[in-house]
Length: 149
Image (tube, rainbow, N blue to C red):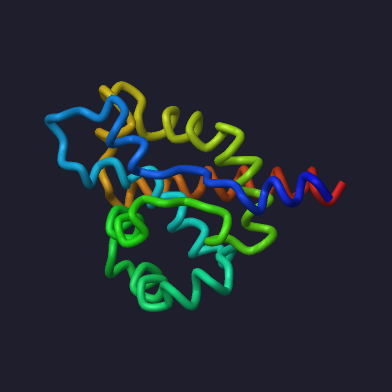
């Protein structure tokens, strides 16, 4: 029961913390939203968002699913905030394990950052999103097996 309360109050990421960090001056500020938006996009495609998020962002959810707005725009709308209230229970449990546990960042680095100077240099493209979404989905399936065991 204690662990559940901990998960419910978690802020997994916030673009503002990236602006104040070692964000490259040469890049547009929108680049700080890309990695957060890719994860949030997968959550939308998977339907792991909360009723609160659906109420607050129904138009953006619809537009993202139609690929009318990119991962960056999706994340920017929420100020680059990725917190517990955006996810349903299963979404929070997985996000706590995967994003909060650092595995998302390792996957992102491995698939998209590679030899780029930083995570902020990754292009906000549907090709990059599709690669990350496939990896996240694989991790989700693996996680489900652990949870169901």
